[in-house]
Amino acid sequence: MTMHRHSRYACWAFLGLLLALPASGQGYPDRPLRLIVPFAPGGIVDYVARLVQPGLLQALGQTVVIDNRPGAGGMTANQQASRASADGYTLLVNANNFVIIPVLQHQPPYRMDPVSILCISDLLLTVNPKVPVTSVPELVELLKSRSRKLNYSSAGVGTTRFMAAELFKLSVRQDIVNVSYKGAGPATTALLGGEVEMAFTSISAVAAFVKDGRLRALATTGDRRSRALPGVPTFVESGIPEVVVHQWNGIFVPADTPKAVVRQLNAALKKTLDEPDVRTGLERISASAIGNSPEEAAVFIDRELVKWTRVVKDGNLAVNIAK
Image (tube, rainbow, N blue to C red; front, side):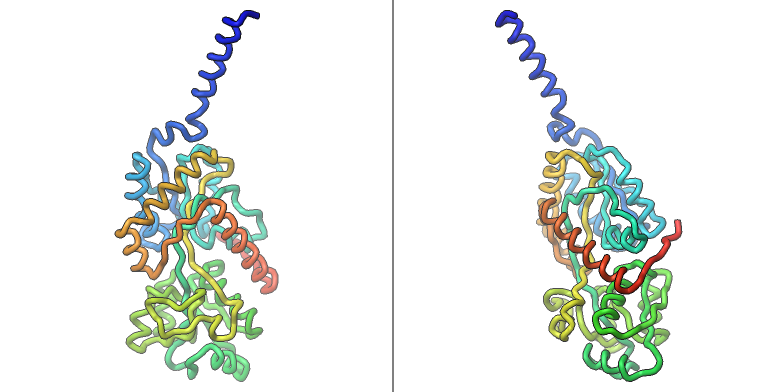
């Protein structure tokens, strides 16, 4: 074979590599992206998706279409996203239920890779003012002394607030009874009305009620005190370090999406989260921007899996989420 023929074959091989590059990130994105939201418009996950949507459009130079796919506690959207082509054009924004539902149903996690954890916020343990306690230790003593179990409201089995209550229950070795409502709003209304004695809630949803005395805050579930309610201690400060629970939102892509594409998406999200309007929008829901790397996000998700697997196992929890 002559040198001329060697050169010709080398050129064809190089051209083939160039043609294959777009699948690995070069030329990406060259068409609109779809951002699947597992819940109806108006909730926190949808709010976060729409908050980062303009920044992603600007950073990527392509339209990002919000696609709300509610149903089965998020399973409908999770399954649809995990079956999509691993090309970076289908994204999923989700929250704690992404991890919790598979654990509750004793199923393997969805075949998706995290791009980044977008933000986190803490929960708040509140009681109706008729409950004669002002701290977590006092609540634990009340639980030990009463023959009737206290009730707590939640937005349903498998929600973060339900799981936080179950973690608290296991940590203090006292029983409390879940009363499920159709959404976080009705669950909070029940607490305000005295239908239930206690609940884990989002800080932004009840901060005003705490300040005007209609609810009493006992502790937050974060690593440090909330800026919205700096006078309220954490569970760690209250002597129950096991109860650390974050509400979080993250972006995922189907497993095996090219790493170059994932890195590009991650860079776009970090740039978006640095925007003042986005940070202000997150503060409205008492959330803090994270924007970590795909590797850091994967470690975070693994820790969540370990935590909630233990709660489900030790609490003997298992449910079927209706489709």
